[in-house]
Amino acid sequence: MTSGSLWRDRSVLVTGATGMVGSALCRSLLSLGASVTALVSDVDPTSEFYRGGLASQATVVNGRLEEYDAVERAVNEHETSVIFHLGAQTIVGTAHRAPLPTLATNVMGTAHVVETARRHRDLVSAVVIASSDKAYGEHTVLPYREDMPLAGQAPYEVSKSCADLIAQTYWNTYGVPVAIARCGNIYGPGDLNWSRVVPGTIRALLRQERPVLRSDGTFLRDYLFLDDVISGYFLLAEAVLAGSSLGMAFNLSPERPLTVFEIYRETCLATLGHEIEPQVLGDAKHEIHDQYLDASLARRVLGWCSTVSVQDGLARTVPWYREWLGVA
Image (cartoon, rainbow, N blue to C red; front, side, top):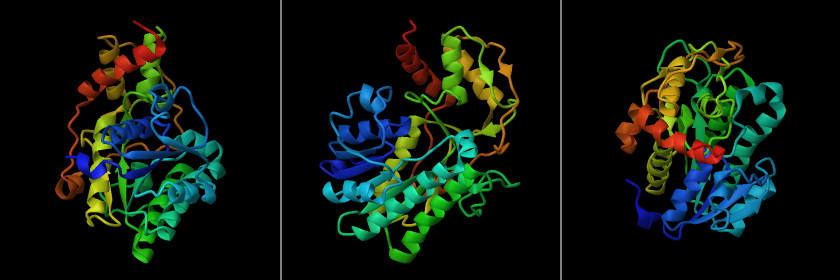
């Protein structure tokens, strides 16, 4: 359980604050009385960070992860104690079309964060790196465990493998107090990446359109609700602040993998109460077919487990999209 007194008046930097998870994390931190600084590259008025009034409660530093000086300025000028590094280019297709910007953001951006923490060890007491199951690449043995090699091959996977290795290098070599959270597919209120199956399906159904599935529907994934992710990030940060779990990576997973067809069906039921036949494109390229995670280490060491079922998570997600899209 998160300790409110631990976060009261603590100076926290959040990269990727305008994303779905970043916005929710900022909201939680602010509710606990933390002093939140957000590194923001572009103002996105559709983000919950701005729509929900979080930007007016946090300190916004304009800058890009690719610019070391921006990261260093955010930490130094605001005397950051904890860094939650969520900023990244997160779309597989975008990485395939333009690998260089993805590598610059995900790899060098992470290097800039941990290098800043190294230079300001007098300030920074904990760094949490938000990573992904994609860091493992493709393995024939499932589920993925933390002791498996990081073997990304496609551009997005490689960017996550490299980022994790860099973070662990800074612990092993310099003693930077860092730990890593690797999640499966995250869903919940605030996700405006319409190419993802949950938000894309909900939007199509609420607009009375036929939903489109990019894959053939058989791809197998974890689907982890936003609140479970936030609780994992807090527990990991608190462990590092207590001097444990340093340099470690933890899988966060509900350990109930679903096919795309299965999560699509659940999304239809949550939105309309019945299923609509989708348009199946079957053209998802450069994506690993089956990926899901073993979260036993997080249960054992952090005391974390997923508490929100897919049905409950979707029931808490659909109303947000109804409001955002203006559909009764």
